Image (cartoon, rainbow, N blue to C red):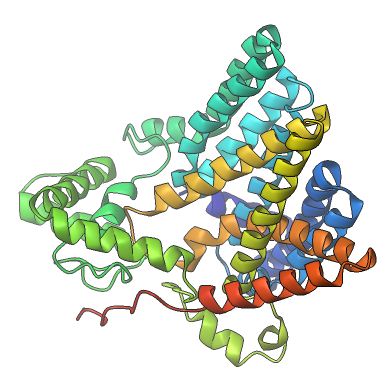
Length: 404
């Protein structure tokens, strides 16, 4: 995908080709991400939640690790947080200007991580739902097209470039088919990007693979045609082996929500163990997931109590709408990941929103402690420990690495 290369090119153009320049920029972006987290938490859940949320973002080791790698997570996380922050504002006022800006950010996210472009559909449905709840279809009639237009305008330069320069009618990039094949072929184990005839695989091998495919088929191929070929092979495998595909999909789902860090570009977990800084930071994925589950449970109990007591206030309704929006984004990240192969980077965009639910959980627990409700706080602490232990159980033993 062209988004991260565009980002790197911009950094090198501004600061020269030092290998430290993009790392410093990404670490600065990590600080901005913590600020975006504060703003999102503060607006919808209060200043204390905002501060806790920013703190959790600041001490999460996985973000700090990837900010030091020449990879896209810091950019994806920042764009995703900014996009959700703008879309959440539509719960208060259905502004076409806000929707247009959110659409541009969706397009920018898609240029970096194309599998997130489908979030545009649930986002549009969410906007329609909010408009229906407020009976404000007039504003939605302007906001929804503005959102779609913003996304289209941001993606368009890549599409036009593909057509004019590469003479290949590809929307963003031509690696979707080969990635689908890497995760669904006779050699797939759900973890390693490997397939018959591909050998050792990185994105830099794609030209070689296209040339090999041209020799096999006896004709010249564009990258888009090569991607279509591999997609066809993957769908043929899925059709002929539905049971194997179901097991691979289940394995990828378990790995997505499991404690193991699957890093195809390196060994993040090993590097963390040997880092003098990262190994002392507490927020591993199981802890983030446990905090999020506690936050969702406590929010559900609180929501039910308020409905029974006096009904939801207008602000509470907007909070619920924002929660649904975030849930749709997390679901999109998960579902669009499932057909491919396991990698920590694929689940990284959901972690900030798990931490938001976790910040709500910590805030509510602090409220119980401050009011002298020691039993409630003890129950929260016990629940957190139990969920952390459960989340730390690896339900999916990784398959042996296939021979390359």
